[in-house]
Image (cartoon, rainbow, N blue to C red; front, side, top):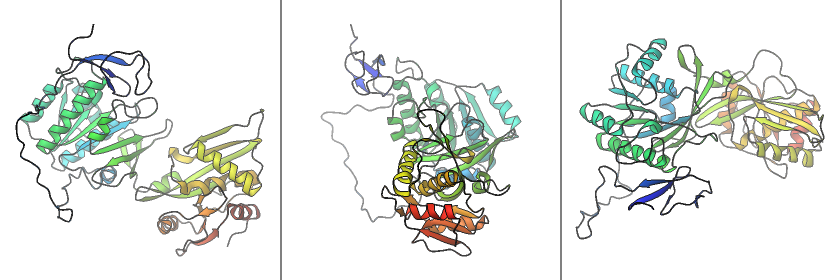
Length: 455
Protein backbone atom coordinates (compact mmCIF):
# COMPACT_ATOMS: atom_id res chain seq x y z
CA UNK A 1 0.00 0.00 0.00
CA UNK A 2 1.34 3.42 -0.96
CA UNK A 3 2.27 5.80 1.84
CA UNK A 4 0.48 9.08 2.34
CA UNK A 5 1.99 11.80 0.16
CA UNK A 6 3.76 9.28 -2.09
CA UNK A 7 4.04 9.91 -5.81
CA UNK A 8 5.48 7.88 -8.65
CA UNK A 9 7.98 9.65 -10.90
CA UNK A 10 9.15 8.28 -14.25
CA UNK A 11 12.95 7.98 -14.30
CA UNK A 12 12.94 8.42 -18.07
CA UNK A 13 10.80 11.50 -18.75
CA UNK A 14 10.09 12.89 -15.25
CA UNK A 15 6.30 12.57 -15.47
CA UNK A 16 4.58 12.24 -12.07
CA UNK A 17 1.70 9.79 -11.49
CA UNK A 18 -0.50 9.29 -8.46
CA UNK A 19 -0.26 5.50 -8.58
CA UNK A 20 2.17 2.92 -9.86
CA UNK A 21 1.88 1.40 -13.32
CA UNK A 22 4.08 -0.92 -15.31
CA UNK A 23 4.26 1.50 -18.22
CA UNK A 24 4.66 5.26 -18.03
CA UNK A 25 1.56 6.87 -19.63
CA UNK A 26 3.63 9.87 -20.76
CA UNK A 27 6.62 8.35 -22.58
CA UNK A 28 5.65 4.67 -22.85
CA UNK A 29 8.75 3.35 -21.05
CA UNK A 30 8.35 0.19 -19.00
CA UNK A 31 9.24 -0.25 -15.31
CA UNK A 32 10.45 3.33 -14.88
CA UNK A 33 7.92 4.57 -12.28
CA UNK A 34 9.61 4.80 -8.87
CA UNK A 35 7.87 5.67 -5.62
CA UNK A 36 8.96 8.95 -4.07
CA UNK A 37 7.66 10.96 -1.16
CA UNK A 38 6.25 14.32 -2.18
CA UNK A 39 7.86 17.06 -0.17
CA UNK A 40 8.21 20.77 -0.48
CA UNK A 41 11.63 21.82 -1.78
CA UNK A 42 13.87 23.54 0.75
CA UNK A 43 13.35 27.28 0.68
CA UNK A 44 9.97 27.04 -1.04
CA UNK A 45 7.29 29.25 0.44
CA UNK A 46 3.77 28.03 1.02
CA UNK A 47 1.01 30.04 -0.68
CA UNK A 48 -1.44 31.61 1.76
CA UNK A 49 -5.10 31.36 0.88
CA UNK A 50 -5.98 34.57 2.69
CA UNK A 51 -2.80 36.65 2.46
CA UNK A 52 -2.46 39.52 0.03
CA UNK A 53 0.58 39.79 -2.24
CA UNK A 54 2.50 42.93 -3.11
CA UNK A 55 1.32 42.88 -6.74
CA UNK A 56 3.32 43.27 -9.91
CA UNK A 57 5.37 46.28 -10.94
CA UNK A 58 4.96 46.47 -14.72
CA UNK A 59 7.46 48.15 -17.01
CA UNK A 60 7.17 49.36 -20.58
CA UNK A 61 8.53 47.46 -23.55
CA UNK A 62 10.50 50.53 -24.69
CA UNK A 63 12.24 50.97 -21.31
CA UNK A 64 16.01 50.65 -21.50
CA UNK A 65 17.88 47.98 -19.58
CA UNK A 66 21.68 48.01 -19.28
CA UNK A 67 23.49 45.13 -20.89
CA UNK A 68 24.45 42.39 -18.43
CA UNK A 69 28.09 42.43 -17.31
CA UNK A 70 30.33 39.58 -18.37
CA UNK A 71 33.00 37.49 -16.70
CA UNK A 72 35.72 36.97 -19.31
CA UNK A 73 37.17 33.54 -18.62
CA UNK A 74 40.21 33.92 -20.85
CA UNK A 75 39.22 30.91 -22.99
CA UNK A 76 38.10 32.83 -26.07
CA UNK A 77 36.29 29.93 -27.77
CA UNK A 78 34.26 29.29 -24.60
CA UNK A 79 33.48 33.00 -24.22
CA UNK A 80 32.39 33.16 -27.88
CA UNK A 81 29.82 30.39 -27.42
CA UNK A 82 28.53 32.02 -24.21
CA UNK A 83 27.96 35.30 -26.08
CA UNK A 84 31.08 37.18 -25.05
CA UNK A 85 31.64 35.82 -21.54
CA UNK A 86 29.75 34.34 -18.61
CA UNK A 87 26.97 36.50 -17.14
CA UNK A 88 26.98 36.73 -13.31
CA UNK A 89 23.92 35.08 -11.83
CA UNK A 90 23.45 32.79 -14.82
CA UNK A 91 23.28 29.00 -14.89
CA UNK A 92 24.93 27.02 -17.71
CA UNK A 93 24.37 23.33 -18.39
CA UNK A 94 27.20 21.54 -20.23
CA UNK A 95 26.61 18.06 -21.66
CA UNK A 96 28.74 15.64 -23.63
CA UNK A 97 29.72 12.01 -24.11
CA UNK A 98 31.89 10.30 -21.49
CA UNK A 99 35.57 11.02 -22.04
CA UNK A 100 35.02 13.88 -24.49
CA UNK A 101 36.78 16.36 -22.18
CA UNK A 102 34.05 18.19 -20.23
CA UNK A 103 35.99 18.22 -16.96
CA UNK A 104 39.19 19.21 -18.77
CA UNK A 105 37.46 22.13 -20.48
CA UNK A 106 35.84 23.45 -17.30
CA UNK A 107 39.04 23.10 -15.29
CA UNK A 108 40.78 25.24 -17.92
CA UNK A 109 37.92 27.75 -17.87
CA UNK A 110 38.00 28.01 -14.06
CA UNK A 111 41.80 28.27 -13.98
CA UNK A 112 41.99 30.98 -16.65
CA UNK A 113 39.15 32.95 -15.06
CA UNK A 114 40.85 32.72 -11.66
CA UNK A 115 44.11 33.96 -13.16
CA UNK A 116 42.13 36.91 -14.51
CA UNK A 117 40.97 37.90 -11.02
CA UNK A 118 37.64 36.04 -10.67
CA UNK A 119 36.95 34.01 -7.52
CA UNK A 120 36.37 30.48 -8.83
CA UNK A 121 35.38 27.19 -7.20
CA UNK A 122 35.46 23.71 -8.72
CA UNK A 123 33.26 21.17 -6.90
CA UNK A 124 33.44 17.56 -8.07
CA UNK A 125 31.20 14.69 -7.11
CA UNK A 126 33.06 12.22 -9.31
CA UNK A 127 36.74 12.81 -8.49
CA UNK A 128 38.80 13.36 -5.40
CA UNK A 129 40.66 16.61 -4.89
CA UNK A 130 43.96 14.80 -5.46
CA UNK A 131 42.79 13.67 -8.92
CA UNK A 132 41.82 17.21 -9.88
CA UNK A 133 45.20 18.51 -8.69
CA UNK A 134 47.02 15.85 -10.71
CA UNK A 135 45.15 16.86 -13.86
CA UNK A 136 45.85 20.53 -13.21
CA UNK A 137 49.58 19.82 -12.84
CA UNK A 138 49.60 17.85 -16.09
CA UNK A 139 47.89 20.77 -17.86
CA UNK A 140 50.17 23.41 -16.34
CA UNK A 141 47.37 24.99 -14.27
CA UNK A 142 48.59 24.17 -10.75
CA UNK A 143 49.37 27.82 -9.99
CA UNK A 144 45.81 29.03 -10.68
CA UNK A 145 43.98 30.17 -7.48
CA UNK A 146 40.98 27.85 -7.91
CA UNK A 147 39.25 26.55 -4.76
CA UNK A 148 38.64 22.79 -4.95
CA UNK A 149 36.16 20.55 -3.14
CA UNK A 150 34.84 17.00 -3.48
CA UNK A 151 31.26 16.72 -2.22
CA UNK A 152 27.92 15.21 -3.28
CA UNK A 153 25.62 16.52 -0.54
CA UNK A 154 23.57 19.43 -1.86
CA UNK A 155 23.11 20.85 1.63
CA UNK A 156 26.88 20.92 2.28
CA UNK A 157 27.56 22.50 -1.10
CA UNK A 158 25.02 25.28 -0.54
CA UNK A 159 26.34 25.99 2.95
CA UNK A 160 29.90 26.15 1.64
CA UNK A 161 28.96 28.57 -1.12
CA UNK A 162 27.19 30.81 1.40
CA UNK A 163 30.29 31.14 3.58
CA UNK A 164 32.58 32.34 0.78
CA UNK A 165 32.01 34.76 -2.08
CA UNK A 166 32.57 33.31 -5.55
CA UNK A 167 32.13 34.69 -9.05
CA UNK A 168 32.15 31.35 -10.91
CA UNK A 169 31.28 27.88 -9.60
CA UNK A 170 31.64 24.61 -11.51
CA UNK A 171 29.57 21.59 -10.39
CA UNK A 172 30.80 18.29 -11.87
CA UNK A 173 28.30 16.74 -12.17
CA UNK A 174 24.62 17.38 -11.42
CA UNK A 175 23.79 13.65 -11.52
CA UNK A 176 26.03 12.91 -8.52
CA UNK A 177 24.33 15.34 -6.12
CA UNK A 178 21.69 14.30 -3.62
CA UNK A 179 19.38 16.19 -1.30
CA UNK A 180 18.32 14.82 2.08
CA UNK A 181 14.90 16.42 1.53
CA UNK A 182 14.05 13.64 -0.91
CA UNK A 183 14.22 9.88 -0.46
CA UNK A 184 15.11 9.06 -4.06
CA UNK A 185 18.62 7.97 -4.89
CA UNK A 186 21.29 10.15 -6.53
CA UNK A 187 20.82 10.48 -10.26
CA UNK A 188 17.05 10.02 -10.10
CA UNK A 189 14.71 12.48 -11.77
CA UNK A 190 13.61 13.92 -8.43
CA UNK A 191 17.16 14.43 -7.11
CA UNK A 192 18.45 15.96 -10.35
CA UNK A 193 15.48 18.32 -10.57
CA UNK A 194 15.78 19.35 -6.91
CA UNK A 195 19.56 19.89 -7.08
CA UNK A 196 19.33 21.91 -10.28
CA UNK A 197 16.50 24.03 -8.86
CA UNK A 198 18.39 24.88 -5.67
CA UNK A 199 21.62 25.71 -7.50
CA UNK A 200 19.85 27.92 -10.03
CA UNK A 201 18.00 29.69 -7.20
CA UNK A 202 21.31 30.25 -5.39
CA UNK A 203 22.93 31.60 -8.58
CA UNK A 204 20.15 34.15 -9.13
CA UNK A 205 20.03 35.23 -5.49
CA UNK A 206 23.79 35.65 -4.92
CA UNK A 207 24.84 36.69 -8.44
CA UNK A 208 27.12 33.68 -8.88
CA UNK A 209 27.65 32.14 -12.32
CA UNK A 210 27.12 28.37 -12.04
CA UNK A 211 28.22 25.82 -14.64
CA UNK A 212 26.59 22.40 -14.26
CA UNK A 213 27.97 19.30 -15.97
CA UNK A 214 25.27 16.91 -17.18
CA UNK A 215 25.59 13.32 -18.26
CA UNK A 216 24.10 12.27 -21.60
CA UNK A 217 22.09 9.24 -22.61
CA UNK A 218 23.06 6.81 -25.37
CA UNK A 219 20.99 8.94 -27.76
CA UNK A 220 23.11 12.01 -27.00
CA UNK A 221 20.43 13.87 -24.99
CA UNK A 222 21.21 15.26 -21.54
CA UNK A 223 20.09 12.76 -18.92
CA UNK A 224 17.37 13.72 -16.46
CA UNK A 225 14.11 15.62 -16.81
CA UNK A 226 13.85 18.07 -19.69
CA UNK A 227 12.75 20.75 -17.25
CA UNK A 228 16.42 21.28 -16.29
CA UNK A 229 17.15 22.66 -19.76
CA UNK A 230 14.29 25.14 -19.26
CA UNK A 231 15.58 26.19 -15.85
CA UNK A 232 19.11 27.12 -16.92
CA UNK A 233 20.08 30.14 -19.02
CA UNK A 234 22.32 28.32 -21.48
CA UNK A 235 22.72 24.74 -22.69
CA UNK A 236 26.07 23.83 -24.25
CA UNK A 237 26.98 20.56 -25.96
CA UNK A 238 30.60 19.37 -26.11
CA UNK A 239 30.96 17.09 -29.12
CA UNK A 240 33.76 14.99 -30.53
CA UNK A 241 34.14 11.88 -32.66
CA UNK A 242 36.28 9.07 -31.31
CA UNK A 243 39.56 8.89 -33.19
CA UNK A 244 39.63 12.64 -33.89
CA UNK A 245 41.42 15.16 -31.65
CA UNK A 246 38.92 17.91 -32.52
CA UNK A 247 36.20 18.98 -30.09
CA UNK A 248 33.25 21.23 -30.88
CA UNK A 249 31.53 23.31 -28.19
CA UNK A 250 28.07 24.13 -29.52
CA UNK A 251 25.43 26.38 -27.99
CA UNK A 252 21.94 24.85 -28.11
CA UNK A 253 20.29 27.51 -25.94
CA UNK A 254 21.53 30.88 -24.74
CA UNK A 255 19.51 33.66 -23.16
CA UNK A 256 22.46 36.05 -23.39
CA UNK A 257 23.81 35.28 -26.85
CA UNK A 258 23.29 33.58 -30.19
CA UNK A 259 22.42 29.91 -30.43
CA UNK A 260 24.24 27.44 -32.69
CA UNK A 261 27.50 29.32 -32.08
CA UNK A 262 30.50 26.98 -32.00
CA UNK A 263 33.92 26.94 -30.43
CA UNK A 264 36.62 24.62 -31.79
CA UNK A 265 39.26 22.91 -29.65
CA UNK A 266 41.97 20.34 -30.24
CA UNK A 267 42.70 17.76 -27.54
CA UNK A 268 46.36 17.27 -26.69
CA UNK A 269 48.63 16.06 -23.91
CA UNK A 270 48.41 19.44 -22.17
CA UNK A 271 44.63 19.68 -22.37
CA UNK A 272 42.48 21.50 -24.90
CA UNK A 273 44.01 23.96 -27.34
CA UNK A 274 41.85 26.66 -28.91
CA UNK A 275 41.59 26.60 -32.71
CA UNK A 276 41.29 30.15 -34.02
CA UNK A 277 40.96 29.17 -37.70
CA UNK A 278 38.85 26.00 -37.90
CA UNK A 279 38.54 26.19 -41.70
CA UNK A 280 42.25 25.48 -42.12
CA UNK A 281 41.92 22.62 -39.63
CA UNK A 282 39.17 20.77 -41.52
CA UNK A 283 40.67 21.13 -45.02
CA UNK A 284 43.25 18.99 -46.79
CA UNK A 285 45.61 21.17 -48.80
CA UNK A 286 48.27 18.52 -49.43
CA UNK A 287 47.68 18.16 -53.17
CA UNK A 288 45.20 18.00 -56.04
CA UNK A 289 41.60 17.34 -55.15
CA UNK A 290 40.46 13.80 -55.89
CA UNK A 291 37.19 12.85 -57.54
CA UNK A 292 34.38 12.70 -54.98
CA UNK A 293 35.59 15.63 -52.84
CA UNK A 294 33.93 19.05 -52.57
CA UNK A 295 34.71 21.90 -50.18
CA UNK A 296 31.60 23.31 -48.50
CA UNK A 297 31.53 26.93 -47.36
CA UNK A 298 29.26 26.76 -44.33
CA UNK A 299 28.13 28.95 -41.44
CA UNK A 300 28.30 27.71 -37.86
CA UNK A 301 26.66 30.29 -35.63
CA UNK A 302 28.26 33.58 -36.64
CA UNK A 303 31.45 31.98 -37.96
CA UNK A 304 32.10 30.89 -41.58
CA UNK A 305 33.68 27.44 -41.66
CA UNK A 306 35.03 25.54 -44.67
CA UNK A 307 34.89 21.75 -44.52
CA UNK A 308 35.38 18.99 -47.05
CA UNK A 309 32.62 16.60 -48.15
CA UNK A 310 33.96 13.22 -49.32
CA UNK A 311 31.78 10.86 -51.36
CA UNK A 312 32.29 7.42 -52.86
CA UNK A 313 29.86 5.88 -55.34
CA UNK A 314 30.79 2.24 -56.03
CA UNK A 315 29.15 -0.85 -57.58
CA UNK A 316 27.08 -2.78 -55.07
CA UNK A 317 28.25 -6.27 -54.19
CA UNK A 318 24.92 -7.20 -52.58
CA UNK A 319 21.28 -7.11 -53.60
CA UNK A 320 20.50 -4.06 -51.49
CA UNK A 321 22.84 -1.08 -52.04
CA UNK A 322 24.37 0.44 -48.92
CA UNK A 323 23.85 4.04 -47.81
CA UNK A 324 26.37 5.18 -45.17
CA UNK A 325 26.84 8.76 -44.01
CA UNK A 326 29.03 10.31 -41.28
CA UNK A 327 28.60 13.93 -40.19
CA UNK A 328 25.43 14.65 -42.18
CA UNK A 329 21.73 13.78 -41.99
CA UNK A 330 20.79 10.40 -43.47
CA UNK A 331 17.36 11.62 -44.58
CA UNK A 332 18.94 14.60 -46.34
CA UNK A 333 21.28 12.25 -48.21
CA UNK A 334 18.33 10.13 -49.39
CA UNK A 335 16.60 13.28 -50.69
CA UNK A 336 19.70 14.47 -52.60
CA UNK A 337 20.16 11.01 -54.15
CA UNK A 338 16.54 10.99 -55.29
CA UNK A 339 16.88 14.44 -56.88
CA UNK A 340 20.13 13.44 -58.62
CA UNK A 341 18.46 10.38 -60.10
CA UNK A 342 15.10 11.94 -61.01
CA UNK A 343 16.21 15.41 -62.16
CA UNK A 344 19.79 14.86 -63.36
CA UNK A 345 19.71 11.35 -64.84
CA UNK A 346 22.41 9.89 -62.58
CA UNK A 347 21.63 6.20 -61.97
CA UNK A 348 22.57 5.70 -58.32
CA UNK A 349 19.79 3.37 -57.17
CA UNK A 350 21.84 0.18 -57.67
CA UNK A 351 25.15 1.51 -56.36
CA UNK A 352 26.65 1.84 -52.88
CA UNK A 353 26.91 5.42 -51.63
CA UNK A 354 29.23 6.58 -48.86
CA UNK A 355 29.37 10.20 -47.66
CA UNK A 356 31.69 11.61 -45.02
CA UNK A 357 32.30 15.08 -43.55
CA UNK A 358 36.05 15.31 -42.97
CA UNK A 359 37.43 16.17 -39.55
CA UNK A 360 34.56 14.84 -37.45
CA UNK A 361 32.43 17.99 -37.80
CA UNK A 362 28.66 17.53 -38.03
CA UNK A 363 26.85 19.69 -40.59
CA UNK A 364 23.12 20.41 -40.27
CA UNK A 365 22.34 23.45 -42.43
CA UNK A 366 20.50 22.97 -45.78
CA UNK A 367 23.18 25.01 -47.57
CA UNK A 368 25.28 21.84 -47.67
CA UNK A 369 22.91 20.17 -50.17
CA UNK A 370 24.80 21.36 -53.25
CA UNK A 371 28.19 20.42 -51.77
CA UNK A 372 26.98 16.90 -51.03
CA UNK A 373 25.43 16.59 -54.50
CA UNK A 374 28.63 17.90 -56.12
CA UNK A 375 30.74 15.34 -54.24
CA UNK A 376 28.37 12.53 -55.22
CA UNK A 377 28.29 13.60 -58.87
CA UNK A 378 32.07 14.01 -58.92
CA UNK A 379 32.53 10.45 -57.66
CA UNK A 380 29.88 8.97 -59.96
CA UNK A 381 31.31 10.75 -63.04
CA UNK A 382 34.94 10.31 -61.92
CA UNK A 383 35.56 14.01 -62.53
CA UNK A 384 37.35 16.04 -59.86
CA UNK A 385 36.34 19.57 -58.96
CA UNK A 386 38.97 22.31 -59.24
CA UNK A 387 41.35 22.58 -56.30
CA UNK A 388 40.40 26.22 -55.65
CA UNK A 389 36.60 25.78 -55.77
CA UNK A 390 34.05 25.93 -52.92
CA UNK A 391 30.40 24.87 -53.15
CA UNK A 392 27.24 25.90 -51.30
CA UNK A 393 23.51 26.07 -52.01
CA UNK A 394 20.18 24.49 -51.06
CA UNK A 395 18.45 21.99 -53.37
CA UNK A 396 14.68 21.74 -53.71
CA UNK A 397 12.79 18.59 -54.72
CA UNK A 398 12.26 20.09 -58.17
CA UNK A 399 16.01 20.26 -58.70
CA UNK A 400 16.27 24.02 -58.22
CA UNK A 401 19.37 25.47 -56.56
CA UNK A 402 18.12 28.01 -54.04
CA UNK A 403 20.04 30.87 -52.36
CA UNK A 404 21.12 30.59 -48.74
CA UNK A 405 21.92 33.06 -45.98
CA UNK A 406 25.16 35.03 -45.65
CA UNK A 407 26.57 34.12 -49.07
CA UNK A 408 28.96 37.07 -49.04
CA UNK A 409 30.51 35.93 -45.74
CA UNK A 410 31.01 32.44 -47.16
CA UNK A 411 32.82 33.80 -50.20
CA UNK A 412 35.02 36.10 -48.09
CA UNK A 413 36.11 33.21 -45.87
CA UNK A 414 36.93 31.10 -48.94
CA UNK A 415 38.93 33.95 -50.50
CA UNK A 416 40.87 34.39 -47.25
CA UNK A 417 42.01 30.76 -47.45
CA UNK A 418 43.14 30.98 -51.08
CA UNK A 419 40.05 29.77 -52.96
CA UNK A 420 39.25 31.59 -56.19
CA UNK A 421 36.09 29.88 -57.54
CA UNK A 422 32.67 29.01 -56.21
CA UNK A 423 29.81 26.84 -57.45
CA UNK A 424 26.78 28.54 -55.93
CA UNK A 425 23.22 29.73 -56.64
CA UNK A 426 22.97 31.87 -59.76
CA UNK A 427 21.91 35.08 -57.99
CA UNK A 428 24.93 35.41 -55.69
CA UNK A 429 27.00 38.56 -56.05
CA UNK A 430 30.70 37.80 -56.67
CA UNK A 431 33.26 38.93 -54.10
CA UNK A 432 36.65 39.74 -55.67
CA UNK A 433 38.84 37.84 -56.27
CA UNK A 434 36.26 35.02 -56.22
CA UNK A 435 34.76 33.98 -59.57
CA UNK A 436 31.26 32.56 -59.11
CA UNK A 437 29.87 29.83 -61.38
CA UNK A 438 26.14 30.24 -60.91
CA UNK A 439 23.69 27.34 -61.27
CA UNK A 440 19.93 27.76 -61.12
CA UNK A 441 19.27 24.01 -61.51
CA UNK A 442 21.08 21.01 -60.11
CA UNK A 443 21.24 19.45 -63.58
CA UNK A 444 23.23 22.46 -64.75
CA UNK A 445 25.73 22.05 -61.90
CA UNK A 446 26.11 18.31 -62.62
CA UNK A 447 26.71 19.04 -66.30
CA UNK A 448 29.44 21.55 -65.45
CA UNK A 449 31.10 19.00 -63.16
CA UNK A 450 31.01 16.30 -65.83
CA UNK A 451 32.27 18.53 -68.64
CA UNK A 452 34.78 20.43 -66.52
CA UNK A 453 33.31 23.78 -67.61
CA UNK A 454 34.23 26.54 -65.16
CA UNK A 455 34.10 30.26 -65.76
